[in-house]
Each structure stands twice: as C-alpha cells, then as structure tokens.
Amino acid sequence: MMNDSRTQSRRPVYRMALLFWSLMALSIGNGPQTVTAATTGVPWERLVTGMHVAFWSPIDACPQVPSLLMLQIDPERFRFTIYQYRDEGLRTPLSIHDWQQRTDAYVLFNAGLFREDYSYLGVLLKNGRSLGSKKHHSWQGLFAAEPIDGKLRKARVLDLAFDGFAEEAPLYREAAQSLMLFDRTGKLRVRDSGKRAFQTVVAEDGEGAILVIKTADVVSLHHLADCLHRQLPSIQQAMAMDGGASSDVIASPDLLHATQETTTQATWRSLLAGNIGVHIPLPTVIGISPRTPTRSLPSPNTASSSRDR
Picture 1: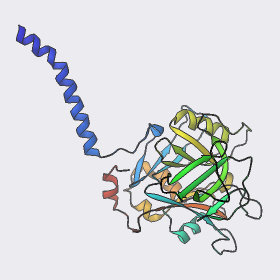
Picture 2 (picture 1 turned 180 degrees about the vertical axis):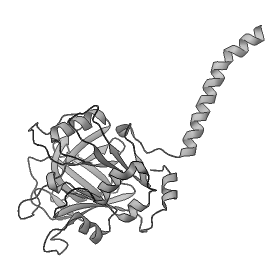
Picture 3 (picture 1 turned 90 degrees about the horizontal axis):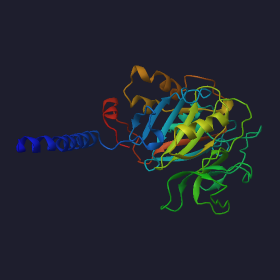
C-alpha cells in the first residue's frame, strides 16, 4: 500500500513534467514565434521572414471599427525609405501602383498630410535632407527611421510631446510628421469629431516591431484610437498618416507570390495587391524594403513552413 501511495502521489508531478517537455518540444519545432503581446488574437500569417500580415475584425469589442489590414514589420530586417515625387524628378504625383513599380519596394504606404500644391505639411526627411516644411507644432507624431547612431532602434514612432527632435541635426535620416493617435500613457490624442474616413496608422509595439494598419472601411480616428489602445494593449503608441482617399497600401507581386495562397487570404491579398478601392495620386509615400542586398524571395512552400521573425 505504501508503494502504491507513493506512485499515485508522484503521478501529478510526472504529468506536469511531461506537459512541460511536450510544450518545449512544440516550441522548438516551430521555431521562434512572431506574435507579440500587442497582437495576441490577431490572425497573423507570414509573408517573409520579419514581415507578417493579418486581416482582423475587432467588431465584437469595437462595433464602430471596421476590419483592419495589418502588417507587422521587423525594422532589423527591413528599412523604411521616404519617396517624394519632386525629389524623384517627377512633374506630378504617382498612384501607389506606379510608385511600387518605380521603387520596387516590398510594401508602400501613404505618408502624412499635404497641401493643395502637394507640398508636405510638417517635417519630411529623405536621407537627412528636408523635403517638407518646418515642424508642425500641433502635430506631435513623427515616424522616424534609419538612425545615424547605430545604437538607436532602426525605426520608431516618436511623440514630439515627449521625445526631442532637432530639425537642424536630426538623429534619423528618414522622417515623416503627422498626427498622434494615442501615446505611451494611454491618452487618446484625437478628439471625437464624428468625421469618418479611411485611415492609415503607423504604430510601434513593446518589442520594437512597426505596425502599418489600414482600415477596410471608413471610421473616425477617435474610435479607431480607442479600439487599438484597448484591444492591442502592448502597442506603445500610434500615429495617423493621411486618411480619406489618400489612405493606401500596396505590396509587390513578388512578395505576395512568396506566400502560398489559401481561401482565407482573399481579402488581404486583394487589399495588398491594390485591387480594391480608389487609388489617387500620392505626392509622398513610405517604402519598406529588405536590408539584405538580394532581391530573391523564398518559394511559397518554404515561406509558409517557417515562423521565424
């Protein structure tokens, strides 16, 4: 009876150990995971190493917010580059399709606001050169990338209410100013005006990933900010780029072909391919390209089998 009692008392320990090592084996077999605390519950799919995509509907928790096309980018693997039509020697702005063909970027999305003459409103830097106007004092969001100091993060969403930025000696080569959506304290930085439009958002999560988010339908910035802050709590801060008809994002055909197509991908593939919506000329866009010099992409079978970030 004593031996049976000891055996029974050890069974929970054995079961816990077995469960632990089983989970460890699954973790090792799948490789490093890419889903951060900021994006738990978001149905991420891998495009290539360091870049994931999702089409997420927060309607249950946020009835006034439409589905969101979301990209998660690792800045250690991808660089961000500003493109402005005059700086490119062009007479007129290009559609996002034409921008993609011209730049050959993996992904392109619209930058911030501009005037009727297409001049940029606020700070705009390209390789350290100013292409915009002086700093807009009411808009505190600044997407900054490619730091001069290699110790800094490769890309950031800066809040000029907290973060210093010297226009005469910028710490980043690429930068685009726009509106803060919510900040690191959790405060929403847009008022509830009731205006609804398509929106483009750039956010930074707690692990340093950059999120590019485009709404699939119109929404107010206030409702969008509140939803993202509540439902993706590890997003540290977010800013809104230009919205309305200017809200746009596109991926290269090569990038889309790198992921094996499934029936569940139809919506985000159409959005990323630029097959949905109206695409007006954009004077300024932000491109995402790999840091490695090679242009080759893995086959769909190879891409879908890995979960490396």
